[in-house]
Image 1: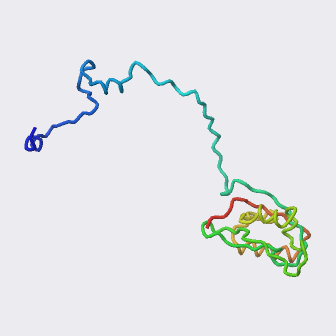
Image 2: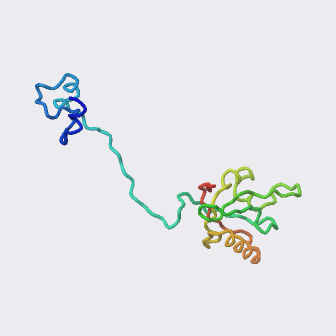
Length: 166
């Protein structure tokens, strides 16, 4: 075929699968690929699909933590920030007690040591304080001020320990 013949042809088809040939005229490479006598065995792997669940909160892992009040800090030794993405309050750090005394921060009562508290709760979201839902940084500060005004000995915090995204 010349180029002028292909340009004027309006109904040209190209068939790599040789579908238009009878089985006896198929080339050897197509015969090897055509394994209609051999079937691929079905997989025996069984996959269990967990039930679909929903939640009103965007967190999967939450803990209730009791904090005993042992310091005079207005934020009980917590450094809080607001996540840029979800606009939720999270624990961005733990304030050191500058007076040289060990264990004088309320957050030290959450775990066995400051290091354990830092590892477990740094970056964790605060979802509730004393069963009151907390979303923003201002809500957390207001709740801490309310607790400070009541002079409570301890309070509970609901902590979601997915680390915050930046």
